[in-house]
Image: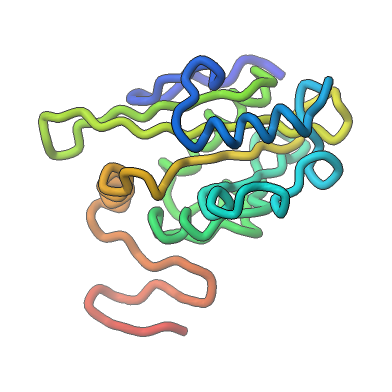
Amino acid sequence: MTRPPRRPPKVMVEDARTYIIEASARVLAYWDRVRGDNFAPALGRDLHLDEMEVSLIPCISIVDVLKDEDDFFYRFWGTRNVDVKGVELTGKRLSEAPLPSIVENGRFQFSEVVWRRAPTAFIYVDHYNSAIPREQTTFRFPLSSDGVKVDGILSYQDLDNQSDKWIPMFENMWDGERPDLRLGRTPVARGEPGDC
């Protein structure tokens, strides 16, 4: 794979092992344990969501790397992702995400993990509507079914810790009007209640 495109502004990329914080250390410890001597574990053979700490699972997502490596398929999108980000992506391709910024950032970050073949931290720094910079980190871990190439990526964001920092970032992405795009619901015009 060629080097991923230039990273979007406001995102720093670091080796996850040098930037590991809080609950992500437990995800990294599990990932390291189940991968053994391989560069990455295989989903379903080595790594199993039901073996992870229950408190971590709502903040996890897993994507499959599709053959063209330009799109990714969300195999799992934890419930806390839905709650904080306002969108359900399980069973969808990245290219189907409702905002171009989600597609652009996802393509860059997933491609970076495929290229690096190592746990990677993506640190978002933004000022939002205040002078105080806020920082959120997403940790992404490669998965490999053949021990050679990255064919999946497990992501972890501590969305329960300091959610006051996460929610404004995603509200900003939705331009202050975050729709309810969870499964079983359809967007409705502003001010109109209702599920489908």
